[in-house]
Image 1 (cartoon, rainbow, N blue to C red):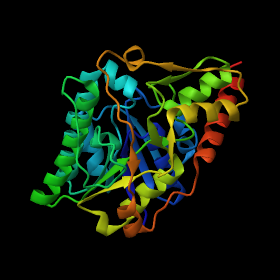
Image 2 (spheres, rainbow, N blue to C red):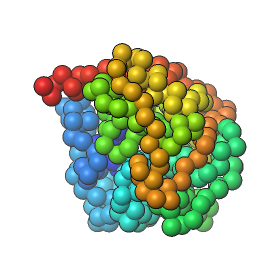
Image 3 (tube, one colour):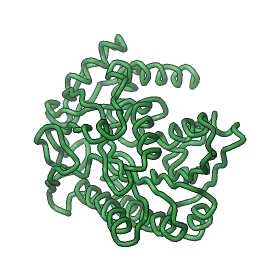
Length: 327
């Protein structure tokens, strides 16, 4: 029996890939997106599918969200502020979207007793750089005056709402903490590091690494992340719980930049840019962010299938295609 999913942020990078996957297996999808950061081109394939409908609107529109929640069986809440650059430049908009938007969507899910999966973020862990971070790891945050930690707090509020609605009102909720997700359709416009570095290298511009370049991250291919999300949606024992989804492969930002320069055969030089010039005075970062995905693997059998080389190959190919089509 096909399921009808409401995917908020459905025209976004991750939302559009999830939409495609759900449609491919025979489900129905209603995508809600304001198109502020999502792109219609992300839905080129879905737009021709009989089981798909796009609704242009905001998760802040309570009446619209209520109507769509009533029509659907399951809600996947992906709509959120995206990218460090956007969060730093528009902190109020980011907080409103994340807190009030999630409150509206979760309330609608409760009103109609719809299962809801809420996408959270590895930013939850803040400055905790203790190695592989399990879901029970402590949150270590800086001052609320630093936009990044205010964003982390807003996503924590989303999670707390899910846990409270599940515990007190029996709402079937699932929380997925996504670590750095990369792949086709990810925009370079909001400070996403791999799309930005790839496009700099391909254009021959200086490849800019923020900070001292020793900080490390782990990157998951969007196809693997979607696989994890779908497994959580399908597994009844995921309800009421939280799961990390991400790849364990760790690389420093300087090594990443040099790898991209080599793979693109670029003549670009790599330059370090201090954080206060890249973002703003007082910006704070974390040295490491590595996911422990044992919990997801033990429940669903999930494991990432694609490597960093696969991610870079796909991102470089897409950027080259965009460059040719814009000529």
